[in-house]
Amino acid sequence: MATFIQSDTRGVFVIAATPFTDSGAVDLAGIDALTDFYLSFGIDGLTILGIMGEAHKLSQDESMSVMQRFLRRVDGRVPVIVGASAPAFDPMVTLSKAAMAHGAAGVMIAPPPTVKHDEQFFSFYAGACKAIGPDTPVCLQDYPAVTGAYMSVPVFSQIVQELPQVVMLKAEDCPGLTKISRIRALEAQGQRRVSILVGNNGLFYPLELARGADGAMTGVAYPEMLTEVYRAMQAGNRDLADDLFEIYLPLVRYETQPGVALAWRKEILRRRGALGPAGSAKVRAPGAALNTDEHDDLSRMMARIETKLAALSARTGAR
Image 1 (cartoon, helix red, strand yellow):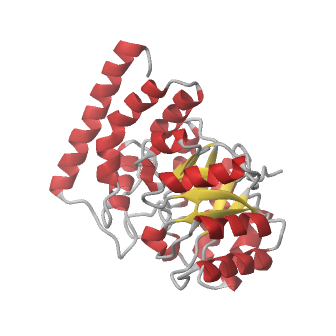
Image 2 (cartoon, rainbow, N blue to C red):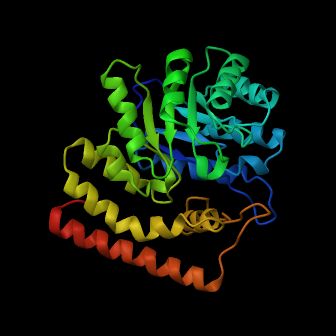
């Protein structure tokens, strides 16, 4: 039986890539290998068919196949959120109902770029919630840099008050620290609590956790950074959390570049064996591929991470 996401859900939900073969076909065996890789780091959940999962490049049949394969491989070990964003409600409903029937923990919905002000923002989510039904928990994705739709704190408060199935916020506004603080302040005054998991590739991760975020939902190609920083913060060891985070930060920053970010992440996953022995770093067209200089940058950064982790371990006993 699936564990649904709730307003107190905490921890690290990794945004999963969708593996493709070199020819651009969905790699189902790669999905199995990638799922095992993510789970090996003690993650608390998985999110599939997001932007990093290239959901917008999949046919409806492919989306169903990818969703079913991930859920089958996870087999209830952690909750899985399925990205169901769509410009119209009909495809959103089709995927949402299928996801929940196959054991998903909830769905993630981002606003379409046609949403331009608060009234439209609320109307979209009210319509989406009504369309998919009240028994499907919703994670609201706030990513204006990609969607073009800005969510104000007042309209989010209206959503929280009037749409109880919205139980989670994927917070990746930038800058977004003050938004997190304002939402938590409103909750302290009696507003219904929601789970806040942060994205933006983890660029501001320890700062966001300190502001009251409940964890991360992002696609960093080193999931152990997300889990270890989270556990250090939960243990009250902010210095260790910052030390760990800062080791990975140059790579995280590089990996966040628009246009090349996904190719960068997939190549890291390939090098780490996360996509299986025959895994490909293919980004489905139209998509970037790393050039020679970028491969050299990546080799240097990955080597420096290992050197710095060894130094930290020798100094503190951390990994």
